[in-house]
Image 1 (cartoon, rainbow, N blue to C red):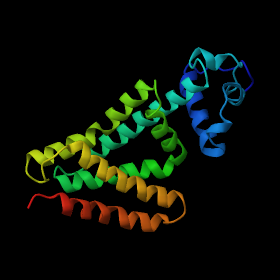
Image 2 (image 1 turned 60 degrees about the vertical axis):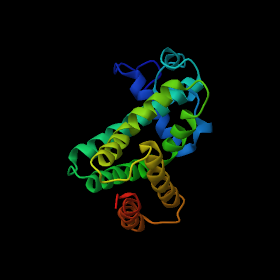
Image 3 (image 1 turned 90 degrees about the vertical axis):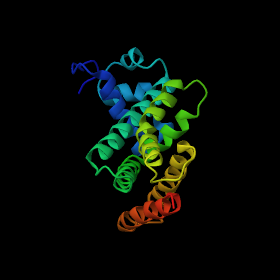
Image 4 (image 1 turned 180 degrees about the horizontal axis):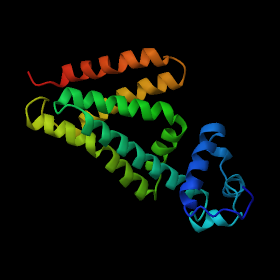
Length: 196
């Protein structure tokens, strides 16, 4: 596509898609609005209509990542059996799949949500993880899980899953090992968290 010939109508989505590909292929440092415009086939000024500067693009990319992660987590819970174990196993599989497919984006997402001034990214992260908090809260209310702060329990589970995917993305676990260890890790976490 030639520069200036972009007529699709959803330039923002196309820019985010190309930006994510750049981050995945070459890293965050390779991302620039001018290069993004060239690769998308638009004028060098066109991306500035959607992103005031490079940081705004990075924030939008992180926010979009959390929206997509939240959609994946929500769909996993909707499709799972209603009991706690099935729902948490489904959440774990969905998180790990996302983290494996979008490793560079996930790193950007977590860095973005801690940046001062990135309220929209933080809000998107909170919405993404609201479904896991709800699953834990419901299981606590029904007596399946120990009482306590559901955010702490969710953080424990997330730290476990994130650590496992970081090991896989770093080459310390292969895909088959990860598929085997994730359900086992969730079951062991649940063993410790179940009310006795």
